Length: 400
Image (tube, rainbow, N blue to C red; front, side, top):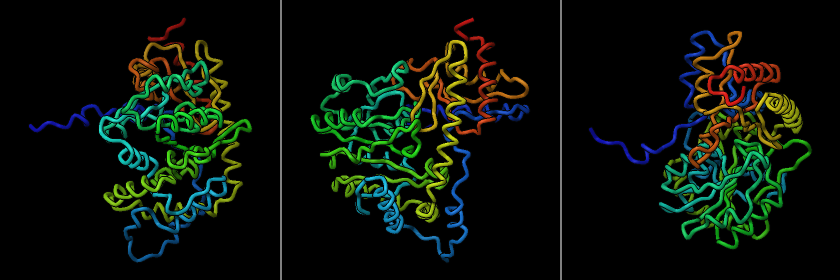
């Protein structure tokens, strides 16, 4: 029998999705599962975007431009201008979600065996994208005790080699909810200029910042025009994950010129998704006001509940809609599976994402889980009650 590739063998399973069969089995047994494992918002997609699909009347569903419809890219230019980012339609390539944008950038900017530095924990699929692109992720640890703040510049410099080509961040961060400050981004800017590196920035959670904090984009770092590549998406911003529309943005003309060849190879981004995404220009500011207020309330429910559980701790996130919590457990993967296979209270249980999958360093995150606070406040409160009860009886608990 022919063998599969080495890439396939080492391709990591998603910590977010790998436990789905156990959740499905629990549901078949009649157990209600509170899904805290995945960043799938339950907020309604703006009606104006749905109406754009309903009103679509073209007779042929044709390929779009490989770089994305120019009409949609013009909408993006206006959107970025509204948040003080000055770009043109020629600086933007529309992609199938931010995921494809990241892969295009990795394939465009790094050769086989080149290295990209990423503070961990980080979005688990970065590992998969790097593996698919033949490059190496070099992690540096950010710690829960510091709220997952950016590690010092010295930590980056310790791992920079001739193979290092890029540094990547997610801001606000998935999975931690940490919001990088302008000062922290300026540290990365100095490193990029000193070592001639790209900065990859995943900013898909830009709108979700709390406690009066403001997001600062890497696109506004002076002197970094040729170093920065921005990744964006409508998935979280407009609660429209299934549209699968994202983009990569860069003022580096060589990067865009090369990346478009990868875009051409996959033909085009989704036509229907772009029709809906283009209608985002008609979404009123009140939409975001209500969404932010709702997520802030959800965040507070989870943050307060976790820190009131014996032996548990989580820092208060400033952005996105995730929390990484340290729990009194021996093994997060075992615990997450146990919750679905062996635990229920009043016919209910919770599904969490083991944090081990968000680290690249072996054995890291073994007593941590990521929680997505994408459920309504009442369901989140019930889910926290389930989690609290589970921690009291889990066989691998580390406190009595």
